[in-house]
Length: 124
Image 1 (cartoon, rainbow, N blue to C red):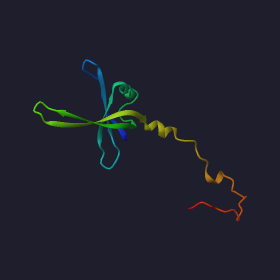
Image 2 (image 1 turned 90 degrees about the horizontal axis):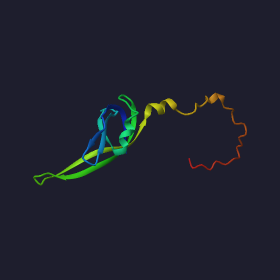
Image 3 (image 1 turned 180 degrees about the vertical axis):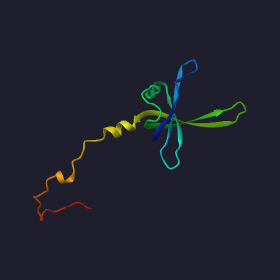
Image 4 (image 1 turned 60 degrees about the horizontal axis):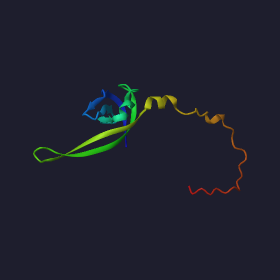
């Protein structure tokens, strides 16, 4: 799955527990009729992927949905969801690179070797 939009916020890397679990959050605002502010978590070694990004950049993030179950002290079961990022791409760099420019149609030579007897077997 992917989330695409502009970076609204990039958090600092946070470390939790004695085993050093690391997490870094980014908020991406989608560009659609009703923009959404999507919080994406990058964990452990993926935290560094955000180092080269800044607020306002258009990005595409590869994500996985994660869910977990937790039983509180009163015995009630609760469920939590998170969106975990595993890849991030700068969309501004892609639009600047583009592809090789295609010459205008009038710069192509017309085909002169057409034969009416050639059979076109394409089904459409």
